[in-house]
Image (cartoon, rainbow, N blue to C red; front, side, top):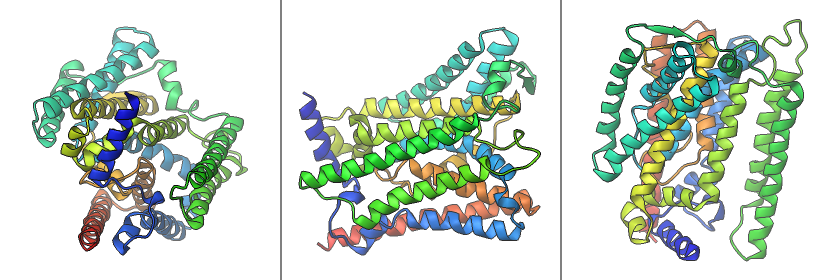
Length: 422
């Protein structure tokens, strides 16, 4: 039975033209832009942002204290972006994640502070409440076939009112529980040095081994493999970025060591979730089904994929991730407010799109969220260091998002022309 499902998924992938750039042979210019060169514009944009703000702030941008602040600032965007990426891969959109994240955070705060629940049980219920909200969204979208834009917009409005009701007119609820605060609130918010250095390095070593083993395995089976240049880039670039950040944050001497140096707990949680989602999306049948449904829903249905169940699961996971992000924000701020961030939803979507996830569905990677979030966070952080106001920050972010979406549309059009010309 599993063989039938695998073959069906493979046929669906072909019908949906789901991109597997690392395994293709000769390509047109448009395909190259979407494949081997696809990560380069995003990476180069990030490098330009870092260099520009490092120079214009006199090196302040790359100081360990600022890197710590930057990484913690992007955690919420990144975690929400993980769920958004899966939704975008379906060709859908979720506008309720900021409201649902705050909803999960409020549930956690009310249970822990007002009702004296166990903190871990409170956080678990908060995440489950977010997942339930996503399941309800999914039922309307996948089963009743109401457009996702309308359903999630209505959900955002509904939860904004529900938050006011749950807090009973209180605009801010202080959370004092040490177990909740210890996740991301100072002074408990950093991994021990040995774990902060050792864990990322171990992950990188495992990643390198996996890249090499997969390359050799595909070569032995006579399948298409990555080019040597791409294989080296896939290994070297993550090592340079990750180990560079760790070196700056862990090995900079100074009297303030221990107050801001090190790897924040919430950042470690984000990248842990990122790795898990990446494995699910690339190494499981469910992940292949998500790409297939987003690439061509009708072809996926005819191939035997349960389209309704796939969409239900994705929307449920999206809202669950939003609730996790909201709880981490509560831990860092030691308070939960009824006010919903007016920009968080759009920033999460922007992080995914800027990182290369297509708004048209079926193409992109969850790693795009990390790059996109770093670009957005870097722009905000750098402009803050230069004492620029919210007006400038929003204009810059809007311009970058438009450029990313425009590039995606142009590349897809170029690829479509090259396919039709064969």
